[in-house]
Image 1 (cartoon, one colour):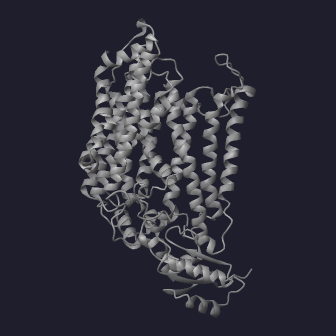
Image 2: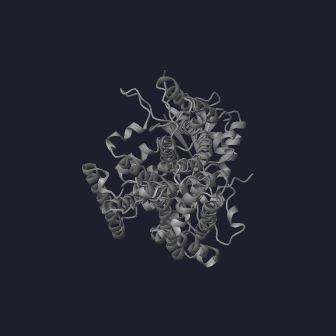
Image 3: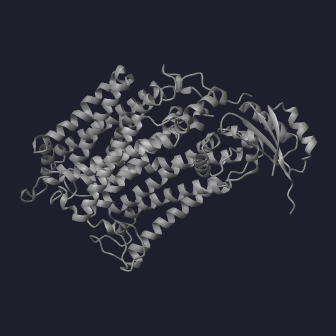
Length: 178
Length: 456
């Protein structure tokens, strides 16, 4: 597949308010393949660029269920099936004693799923990304806010999109090479 | 947005001094790591801590050579310093998780400037704690038998034992604390990557940042994961010291066999943990000029948490004494008498003075707002909490049901070297952390600024 030499057009803003406003107008103008970058989480910004499905909770739920089952069944199988051991006359399947480790394993698996699930859904680690080619983008981790329209967007056209972003009164506009 | 400046409503001290911007917050915190040269004081402090770590390794090396006979443990006191120190260190770690997880769920925005190093404190404290059970098992090269793994012997661990529960609780706690700390660091690693000028620093922080670029989609999933992790860490941290207390409470030894232990252990853990947080925060904010971020409000709030948990601990001591009388059990009653008048009466009375009487000074506002007073008071509480674990472990064991099996416990120099050595290891790790990673969460501090608010 031939890659577009341009990855997208990026506009830089001064404040969180300006970025949210710009993201809303861009999305309303019919651009779907856009993204916004900020130095801290901004509530509602993801929704403005059309992101509505956050699968992290589902991943964590599955992780927790798997962890709990693993913890309980492991203890049951080891204590009552594979090597039954009589401890003070207690039943082999002494479920109350298994609760603590079941709980700990639930937390362990759910926590690991939360971290690695979040990273996987975000496509991280990804040391290289085209947006890093824009020199000004290094401020995205400090005090600047960026909006990008990807060249893969059906509505994208080099001059028109640049003109549209210019109307949003950004601080600067850069073309992102891919 | 976590309502910025909300915490200023009912106190005079702000959660952060005014006048900062995204840029200046970023510069101020990242400069400690990136541009500020290491001072002579840092080298001296790190050097001492490093030497103490070496002393610990020497003591442990000699232990591996000779066996646990070099320690003061004998029958009937089979659990000496190793278990005392294990419980003490694990307890200290709890404040870090309380600050980072529970206060996040309670929307206490003042946590944002202290959660990072409190979490680091948790990790290092758990690392110190983890040493002790490992070297205490007698044959430390077989310590991995604690874990259920398919062995040629065909047997499995005994899951009905609280000691086994403890293995799972502590290892889960260490893992989740490390993950929580690491994901909190990712966006700040990106900031350091973009600010660093040294090529090696750029590469190292770049790798650690995992290519974080601050995309809105990423932030959304990130915040969800962070919140869920906080929700998971909250019951976890309460369970860890509960399970540690089961190690004692499930046994039948008088002084251990009591139902007050779980809540009283958890409260004691938070009590000592906040004392350690203050002992670290007070010098750090002074030396690195972070008084604008770690304000009087933080010190006061930590002092209030200590006062509250200290009262819960005092209630625990009261109930222990009450049950000694009310149970009508002569062994329980003797345990209390023995604490007050027996051969270990001096540590017990010192414990009451350190943990109950002196901390009542925190009712005085002047004490809560004086960093120097709080620093020394925290030291007193840490000593008191260490004595508490000494009383629980040693004094309960040394005189149980039969007078013929009574004995005394005297720690040896190897016990002391190992214990003091872990303090050195903890401090050495803290010294390195301060120079290599941002000690305050930069991105969470940005969210506290008024300009972070989105105006419609």
